[in-house]
Length: 197
Image 1 (spheres, rainbow, N blue to C red):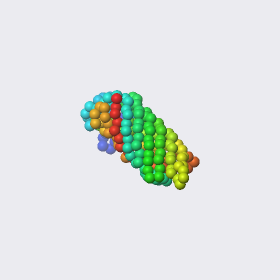
Image 2: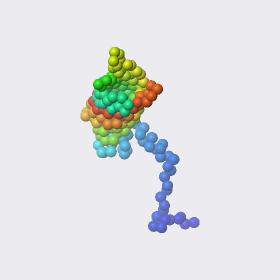
Image 3: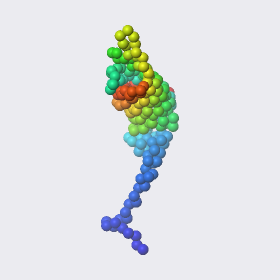
Image 4: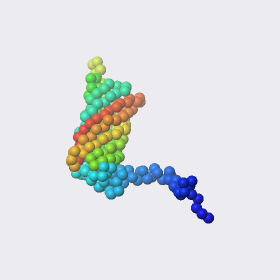
């Protein structure tokens, strides 16, 4: 029996199996050291130039930013992060933050897990989640009110490699929720410098 052709005389293209697409995308993201759109692991990125590999898997980062509170006062923040990258894709870090404002002081200790996406020779994007503990100190007449809460954040961070050892990091969006019986929300953008070793 002759094969059935389309009206233009060509064979119809097979329909892609949409059930396998999520697994394909996940495999691409988790492939060790492969840049998006590349064919050779750890060598080619979207801009077709060699990847600028970091000096090592460990990093120490200093951060500075702001806490823009939804239900509490705005305040400045500084932070320190110490972490390690695994399989060129997954990052685990411990973070410490201190914040201070007109009538508020805070400290946070948290664990951050991130997924690295290599977009160009020097440019990465880190999509991460952070969970931990926060303490707040609010001055009151004659005393200082202290309260504690659980903290959870979702963040997106741009990373630009200045050299194999140093990296500029900017997080324009960090959404954080604090819970101690009531929810408080905050936007906490920051910028920082990381040392890779």
